[in-house]
Length: 233
Image (cartoon, rainbow, N blue to C red; front, side, top):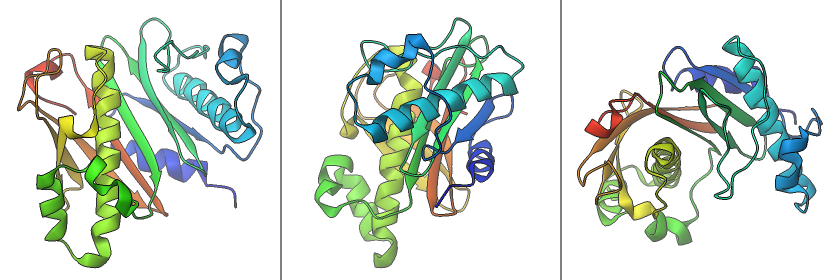
C-alpha cells in the first residue's frame, strides 16, 4: 500500500520548528534515478536500498524547493552521512513505507536530526543494547502493552539526537551515551549526554519532539547555534 507522503510531511512539521523545509516521498514509487554525484553511494546496493536512497534524496531536493532554494545533489560522505550543499543543513530518514527530509539554512541551524520508524514494538533482544538501566526501569513503570512501542520511541529519539549533534561534533558513539526522558503529555523528549562528546559536556540536555500517528513514529530535533550550551529546538 502506498504511503500518504503529504501526511508524513505534515507529521514531520509538528516535531520541527518553523523555517525548515520538509518533504516526503514514497520509496515504492520510482521517482528518479538520482544525480550523478549521488549514484555511486548505492551502485552495489540491493534494489530496496537503492529505492530508499533515491527517494530520500528526492525528498531532500523537494524540501530545498520548499525553502525557495535551487534543488541540488546530496551525495554521501565517507562517513556515510549526507553531504549537504554549502549553506544548508538537514536530515533524511526512511522506513519501509516512506522517506522524509528536512532542510534549513546553516546560518539558522547548527544541526538537524529526523527519524522515521514504523510504530511496531522494539525487538526485546535489542532492549539492553538500546536502553540504559534507567530507561529500562522507567519502561517497567509503564503499561505492559505499551512498553515495546515506548522502547522503539526511545530508540528513535536517540537516532534523531545523534543525527542532530553529528554535524557539530563529528563524533561516533553508542546508544548508552544518550539517556532519553519522555514527556508523554507534551509529546517531547530530552536527551542527556552521559559523558563528554566534543562541545557537549556530560549532563548536557538537548530537547526534541515526537508524534505517533498513522502507524508511524516521527522524532525530530533542530539545534540552533547556541546548542552546545545545552538547548535544542
